[in-house]
Length: 500
Image (cartoon, rainbow, N blue to C red; front, side, top):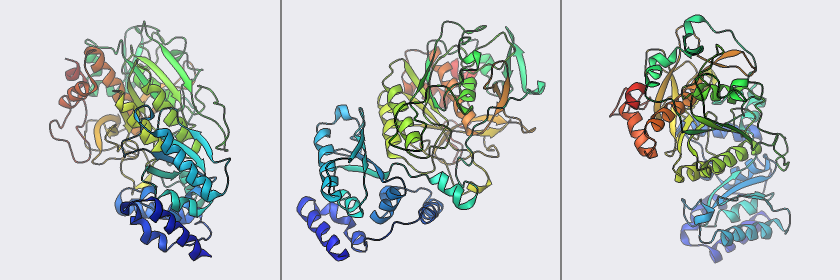
């Protein structure tokens, strides 16, 4: 019976595909109908491949491995399609509906049903989520030329890793969440009018001096994270406190808080983690009169999206939320810069499409290079920071540009660095989750948010510039320009030089 399954699929391939599509025949001929791999077997293979090749991709896995991941992820798959690898924009695709229908017809044929096949079809991207149970369906779909990527849509790598080993071996070994507050050491800030605390790192990058030329006015930054706290007044009704004026903050939510991927209904824009609030503070907290920390671009506008529950983009709702946030910000013509301090250790096709879509709309995108613990020495720069369409940022120690922070990642994909770790161990002072309270935040996360704020200062000074012109100026004002460092990109940005 197992041999019959393969013979039928071979006949289908020969009748409907070109010779190029038969390149997987050798792999498929060894496959049989059997039980799916366990979560441990899947994670072990992902880790082994990442260590050996630096990257793992579902596209480069066998159909049996892919099917196992789909089954272990609630039998939901994400499919990107198009006439070419760059055919991701539905509005620019000449036959997206026909290609989608072809995929659904193949699924219907091999699953033996006509309903409960399509879970979701993206409005802007050539991307769908579908229900798949049978291994032969996976094999048949992989023969189609129109499929750009084919992945499990709800496989929880990080959750499985935690269950297997007791400690997540990942770039996001912790959730990045915390609602605590910490009193700031007087050594970690200075005070400027009207009574704002300036983080120590601002002097290292000449940010305070750069304010004589630019404060971020007229520039809107998009933040994709866990939301922004409704309990922090300076990131709510008092966003225009002190020397900050004439700007707006908009809070949105595209995250569904449910373990069931088929659940719907966003849980709002409020931050229930604390990470997003810290990022918003680092990039755009007001130059206030209340004795609280100020952000890099204190006169920039902010549009935040609660897209995930924490920094680890694990499972359907977080990956779907991030994709939706990218497309929404891409279509917001007032947004020029997008910052995201979250990620994954391997690529997620729908997020990759979202990033490319935003980039095609002229957005300047900053992503965190990765923050980890000692368990993740095998992980380099994380996704989506490694993409060519993003600027990858990592954190370095005070007074250096090539000594990464104790938990930061580095690598060839890094574009810029930001000083965020002191000899004392203290990081960057920020507004806390709660009103009138403060905290410290570190890692590549705060380095990314701070660099997005720097970009806003440069763009505000030169409002007619394009994304590429802003980037060029940032590079020219950095430590290693014109030749990138092998692991730290262009290094630290001299912001005063960048705005002059």
